[in-house]
Image (cartoon, rainbow over all chains, first blue to last red; front, side, top):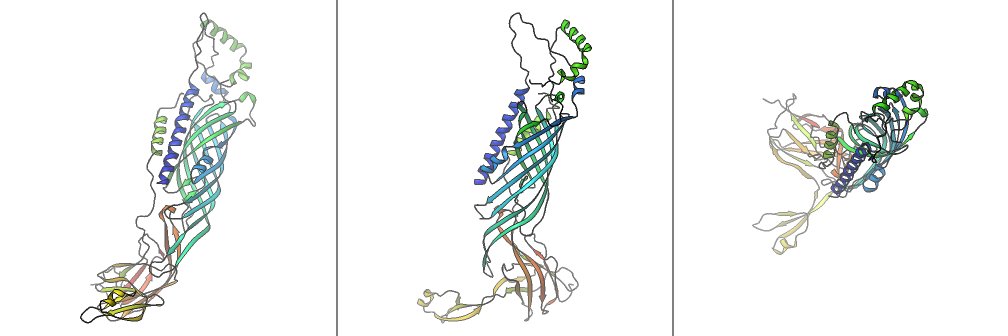
Length: 295
Length: 199
């Protein structure tokens, strides 16, 4: 009953995060139309063809460093939690190869059977995310990803005294340091939203499947660091990431994101703009076209 | 927000629905740990043994039993003293008896039997008694035992690993270990080949 309540609470919290994150993501992308004062003409917006902008998306867009906020909270309210960080590469704002490293902790004490399970160990995941939004210039992202995870760990299992019903005798057991190496795969769906400048936040839902674990005569791992509970062959997980852009090795002109405005432009001014673009194309390619979208 | 397709949102909400699914576990349904003996004739054909078999295990030490007798009544044997029977006029005598236990009681026409193993002894001794012949067979099984936890919520089991087996030849032709791991999977662990050939 207690386990059911904990799981239900965990699911409700995660569902709220999902809902909140979705609303924020949608709100961030709605065009903000400011009301015009009487007699005021709409400001002309510089028109840049999408094909032209695509050329401005250079291959290397920098690194991001992220920290998971959900794992520590999960550890405080349940038996299992993780402390993890990730380093991600941004390629054309579309592909994001990623390495995640962390430390998983699980201390489970079953109320009914009095069996305790304990594991503390590091884990690592490698994989890639794919940004599914059509507009690759904006800072918000909706992504699908895949991971391969591995953890080598030792776990302890202890239990109450076992009594032989026929021959007699009784003995408790305390098995320490059972070696295990586990491999698993994950499919990820997530949202990432820009909060300010180089700081983003986002959540991700992870569907995990255990590939293999080292077998032991005594037990099988009940909880794998970085994976979760092995009660079933698959499990769900989640992360709530605090993401920081690191502009290592990235040229200033390659700041990610270019605002695309396809509003109506007055005919006369459009012609003027086109002429100016033709005259000063070289200069604009360098600076203006790469301005931060939301700035 | 422009998406590659609305299918993405359908997938997202389906994922949320799955998150609210019921909790389940993988505790084994068949969770009795027994050593499984299968019966064969001397040529290796599976048989149903056409005799009544009683399997007793030898346990170390002796125990005191109380025997109550009264003229015209059946004799009563108890492991604890009974004041009530004495008040009814029964006479009490005590005797020392082996602590042996019957594991299979007069099973007829069996093709296999399931026998528990000791948790903390290195060797179990089983005595097979037959109805049609006066001689008995003694089977000695050497094994090691260890605790096994499938999942903490499933509790603890005691698994065994068979190391060796010997048998006398009153009705048994020969005996062999087919699977040394004794757990709750239910496979055959020991094959007993009886004298004679099935018709």
